[in-house]
Image (cartoon, rainbow, N blue to C red):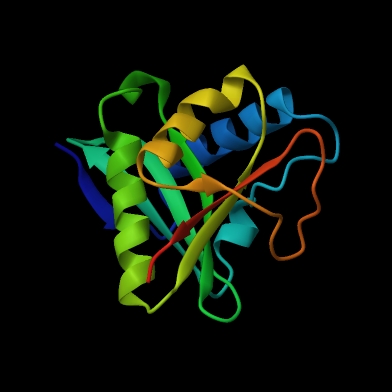
Length: 153
């Protein structure tokens, strides 16, 4: 069982996991194809970050970014390697979905990459009902990125 709580990004464990996330995105993506938010982006208005904790350790992080006209975006989902396939990512994703619904969002979207490094996350999103679709917001389609959407209404 994980305790999911909103995170102010001041803790060393959360920052380290987000740094691991950014490094992983850059290592697994072609140049110019990484859209993960850095620390300052995650601290922007309209972005809420959560961490899933098990005892005294951060197991997973994820964020919700409110966009325009009843839409929101999943950002910066990452599970610590020590907690993979234990439900930490699912706990964060369920929190993001529930919060988006509670805030009146009609659709939740995300952008991610292609290839083996992205398959576990894609499996999680698709298992929860996200479906591939068109680019959204300021994103443009490429051979590498994928766009998934979940209708909330």
